[in-house]
Image 1 (cartoon, rainbow, N blue to C red):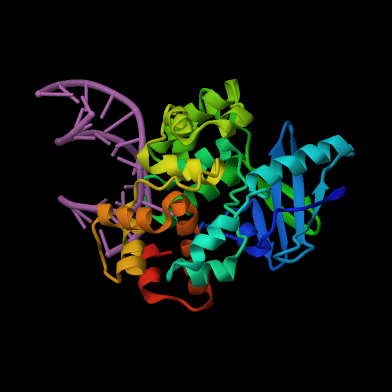
Image 2 (cartoon, chains in turn red, green, orange):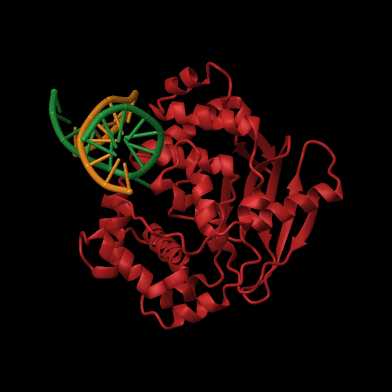
Length: 315
DNA sequence: CGGCAGGTGCGGA
DNA sequence: TCCGCACCTGCC
């Protein structure tokens, strides 16, 4: 069952649904003009297919929802609305475009990716599982931990000629033995965090419409109350899940190295200096601007490997 | 082998 | 409020 979505112009389909700087997860796949993912929504797992059916200035997406049982129209509409929020389809990026045009670094990048959205596509709980496996380790190990979680707790879903994994519900990790189970999956001390967060969410999920409506500072304080969320994870959540375009006030070591290259053509520049520079250049758009620059860099890296970047990510 | 990595919570000053 | 420390595991 399907319907048509109308993102606000300008819109960049492939930039929104494909994020080369994020490591691949088994719940989504992308090829030019087509995106598929699984979606756990309510008590049901759906298959989602989005197809580009428009242009940058006259955007349209053909959305198809797959399910084992019959779907009613209201159900499909609520899924469409949720996906529109997750992928930030209504975003007005016109003043961002204006800002980019007067910036030597962002300008050419924005031209290539005009209309690209944040586009994480996860629920809050799912994204917390991601930030948890990102903590204090290397990209390779984060990827391995997430694969193990999907293999053990995820479900395989076949639809539209493909097979993808779906995220597990929080309740799957909430039973008493879950922490021991998780340790066996080599997630280390993160087992405690994953278990505790799962218990919290299994008992009471968040009211996302309230959270989305909060000013950044209040949303920040609320999210910091979640066990396992600290200064490094908080801006991932604020940006990717809540779309606060200015959520960029701390910088992690690997990102510091990348910004040092991009902004100062050096191997390592002082973190405060980078934050100052980013603030001066892009103001309230600084996190979105950084996102554009990162995706552009990783996209170019994928086409034609960049040596220093390969050394940094060591995948 | 010891140190460290894309952090965080906790106890003690 | 700020600081030092433990923590699973894999890689150098």
